Length: 291
Length: 334
Image (tube, rainbow over all chains, first blue to last red; front, side, top):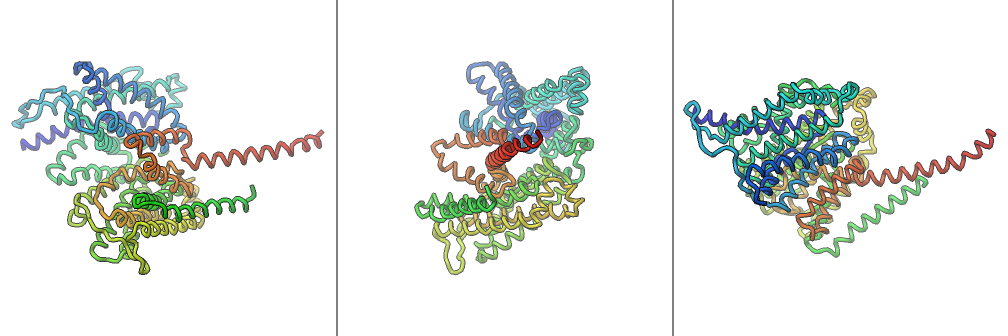
């Protein structure tokens, strides 16, 4: 039982990180039909920005700020202006393939110009254990979960309670009508790219202490984010959250109770089953756009 | 340019390319022959994916898995003493059937959803290659895969094996040339252009979607069957998702839906890294950058640029002809 609680907590922690990445992924899809195959690499990269800043002599907190700033600039603004905008007119598939090339570019770039070795990365939560319901749970897992959930709640509040947030939702739901109603659609699309950049930077900050900073981190993270987004529902933020948490728990339980060798297979089977039986996702509504 | 002159020119270019492919290896060393053989083998897989993606419009990120299935079939059977030709046929049938089954999701979902299903399949196949040690020997791999003997001729020497790969490539290419000009090929293209209209015109879209996957996958299998004896050692590492992504990029870079696209794409992805060896680690970075720029400029790939250039010239020639004809019309009107 203690072991089980441990697994659930660890699962919720990784699941919350998956959720952050998956939310960014669905936001990009909703506002600009971008299937970002480089989303995993987007999580891998900010940790290297932070490490670079710390290697330059900055303290950890300043390194985090630099990491976020670089992420907004490169993974938000530059990504949109330099890749998505010129490609968007060609349609969904060429853009998706261009992001595959981008993922290769980022991965090989880090390997070549930063390092091919895994780098240790400081954690924002101390590496001690706490006692929950008789189970010894690492404080790091709890910290990751709490920070990620606060970020998600804040984002949700921003999207539903503020004027800008509602304009963004309008843009996502129907850009043409939103434009008629006076919503500056272009700027709203830019905001989603910036939010995605913030989410991946946060995910990077939370996940890298666990996985170490390595150029190939994006492969598993990207896949997990796709699966979380699709299982939960590709067009719903709450779907991405549920999908992420579910995936984190399933992943951890499968590794312990089913097979370590096939731990990677369980989420994939879940993905195939959901796509075939309920393509709109467990919590999504049927896609209204022509897919 | 008249049609017959065009055919003549294309025929001449093809004959030159073929002569080049036959004569070039005579001056190459062992490694050069290996790379050229690898190009031929990769091209076969890319031709298969071009049918699924380029002609029938079904996104697949699973082609690498079929290369793996073909390679493992050949490796397992030939090391057990089965004749190569039997392994060859079994691999084709196996990949055809699995490809057919993988086509079923395509009947339900399209585009990026389909990409994700096939991506998941690809990763699952890799896990099976790695974990089912009783069958695939897992990460230790299968060693000593014999090169086949055909019609009493051994293909043990690199040159002989290269000619064998080249012959299979030419047969596959000829079959594909015939296929896309047959009613089946037209049905595939109808499927890509407008599935609803194809259905209303009486094309059995369900059957052709499954066929597009099955035939494309079978070609992936053929590629794998040749890959195993080419490298003589098989382990799971070459068959990760990266291979499927690479094959997809090849087809797109060359020009999806163009007959010669896969040849060109495989050339860029397999041969170019060898010529640019001085760039080493930089090569993949430059390649990725090149793909992004190419897609932004021409989403239909390298052959798309050529195609656009020819169309432009034709349009200009036609408007010049119209302009030459126009004054007389105006004079008559006046």
